[in-house]
Length: 319
Image 1 (cartoon, helix red, strand yellow):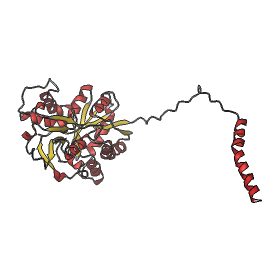
Image 2 (image 1 turned 180 degrees about the vertical axis):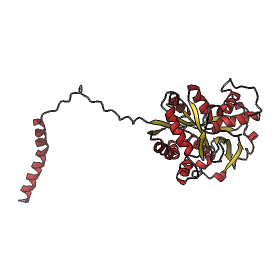
Image 3 (image 1 turned 120 degrees about the vertical axis):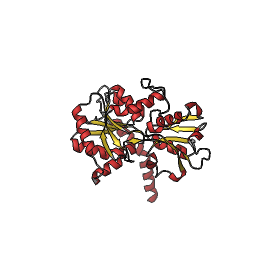
Image 4 (image 1 turned 90 degrees about the vertical axis):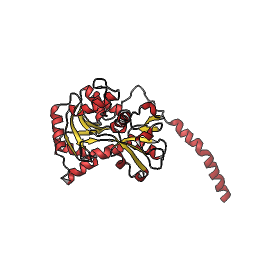
């Protein structure tokens, strides 16, 4: 009896594939008309005032530093404001020129290029130091016995932030020129790779021993203190102070919008805890009015570096 049941089960298992195939043969095939298609559109963001922070740090850091400020400005002005994230200094400049960035927060060297396209300064920041100016720093590892003074950088490998970085390159280049050191006196000048995060990358490259020294903006070491041991870094030199980071409105942005945003910015104060946290997160102690002429000193430096000819005085003693 058991043997007969096993034989029946084996026969049934053998027949199942044929039964399934037969069922499939009875089904009608489905024809697909590829000429009838529907385009799926990615939803576009709602219209808003676009705000961009020059990408000296990673996009994550840029968002963390400025999102509280953007939310405050949106509440105070009633305007929809959205942060956008260009990958490079040059892309930031191009987006302002094309009208894709309404409010630019940039270093002063980038600003004077933006001004050529009609962008205009309306505000600048008070640095964490309490001054409306900032400096560049030249750093090396403390255990690098070959670099103790500015003159020791000759013949060494230099990593800078970006060719358009003020504190991260151009201020330092001006300092070297003042001391008779030119770009030909270095074994190599490299710039931090990739989109965003360039200040951090310059520091980390020196920390890892890939380059002998780096030029960064004042305040960067505080940003990377959780990633490296600062006691292993030496500040070799500091540049002279220059006018600080600047807010500029693109050409054609309505004056009423700029007025609303600037008034909200100027109201921020460190004396109110809620506002102090907004300012501190953004790496500033306040925002004050600015005009285009505040940045003439930057234009003079650019001329001395051979970037612009109209301010070239021929002098090198005031770098």
